[in-house]
Length: 250
Length: 358
Image 1: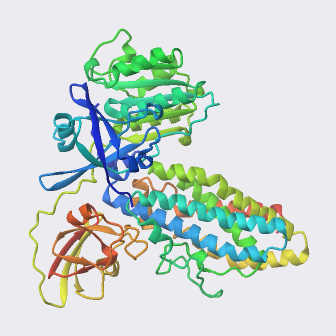
Image 2: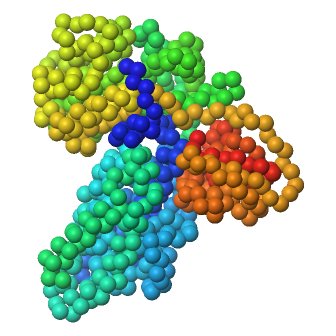
């Protein structure tokens, strides 16, 4: 078989790459950027949620928060391992940033990442209490669910496999959040707290979907690293969120 | 970081006119490192005329053979594969990284699964490893192989596949598709295309029964087979890929450009290429990295950690000299080939030309 075809054409037609040895230079850069953004976000999320364990009102909630803290770190490790195949020094990478560092609660970062690490901007904001933690987890958990529909079909096969293993557990984190939210929403005071936290987190999580009409999207789409535009993903998230909030009478 | 370890060549067997099967033994202390999973590959390195070449070849041995074996098919003009086919002999030593790759599915001894594999040419190597392991370790599972070659004489592992058919009677079947040789059944002559896949699914293989499919071959064939599998109802997580890329862009050619000597001065004329677009700008010799200068000039250069650890910002210096403050990610052979971490690279010559596209 002598189907000679350029890697670029192959990718544009939905081809899957399978080893560091067969990825082009630009693909490598964008793939690593995507992976490090995920790793940094998971490590920052885990570090942020570690504090939420002590906000937990009961044992059940404490277990849920501990589990999220543990599993997000585990997901970061799995993706970091794929980065290691490309030469990333995984031991140094884990300690290259203070994952628990946060900006002031009232700071406004927009969609911009901060110098330092590549976590989504939402993971730079501090969590202030249990309801706050649950609301943030529900909003970001649903967002991750939407993002996973993209990540599980990225064109780098070994990474897509990792994301397919991670996706159900990330979905479970969002589910734990929704269960927690339902318990809080059972009282009028709880409802009021939720609404305040929603006001705070909603625009910050939405910013994580990136800009509409992103100039980078077309390149990433040709490389098979993205499929749907940012605005379509954001719309899906908003629709899902509406549905969940309506279900809880919020 | 993955490191190279010496492997002793214990056997070289000619498989076809242009392929060999090489048996390798790790040192006692490296044994655990080379405990592979079926379907993985080894990356070898060797110097040819002062230039380090790295090539990956899939393991063809099953988990239960107690040996490490790779199949190497000679590629026209390929320095490494030609050397392996013509010069490699028992007793030689060759350096390899521990096994890598995720081209496999978890083995479950109790499972009763139907597997399909589609291989073209030397794409059989990892698939043979998977077939042997699955048949031995999942005694209730069945395996069908569709195997495309030019002609009978170019079929790698033909006898071994026949033996497996006899050993696992009724659990393993092979459909040979030959491009340049007529067979009794027309379906098995020609190349694997959309029509042939559809016919296979109509007459020979029930797509609904397939649990997992493996595909290994060149780009066009991978696209065709994957599209057909999806069309016949398989989900992405049921399809495993291993690409035998016709071009290997990972090649590290030594820099041919003559090195400019570092000169005293304040500024550097920088030329940076990204996504096919080239920009020229002046940058200071000190205090600003190539990456920061590119970003300051509105180029969307990739980066992440900015600490010389992750290697996202790797670029290649085509002309001039730069110095890296730290490097925890690039290996010596990459640095020799001109690659630098742009987040750590400061210019030291009057002129610097770099690209993110190579």
